[in-house]
Image (cartoon, rainbow, N blue to C red; front, side, top):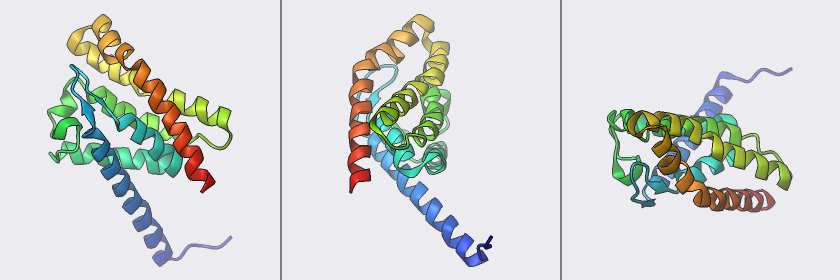
Length: 174
């Protein structure tokens, strides 16, 4: 077994965090493509989260999301509609942001083969709604959270999941 030199480890870490930073920038850009809905806007973030995990792997996908959340917490305008700050992380959409972590990690398990990729990316997309709806329910109640925080997003979820599968397959062919 060979041991990685200190320089090689440093280079690998720099590459990993550089890619994670690029991933967080992609996620920030996807947050700005938004349909203003209340209490949760419809954005391209979930598509970006799925692709970050599926293309980069579980660790890199989750690290990209974690950096994105940290950037937003520091006040950078990376969240939907150019918002940022701790108030967003205490607001109605905070559960979805946390759900992005689990979704990116799970998407990293997409592997090869269309059935597996479709199933894993669909599950990853649905997983992010669990903390999202649960958190949102504290603001609007369970019934409204299920409708306004999940049901209205079902058509977009189906389309974005299918698009993520198609983009993943295209990227892996090239």
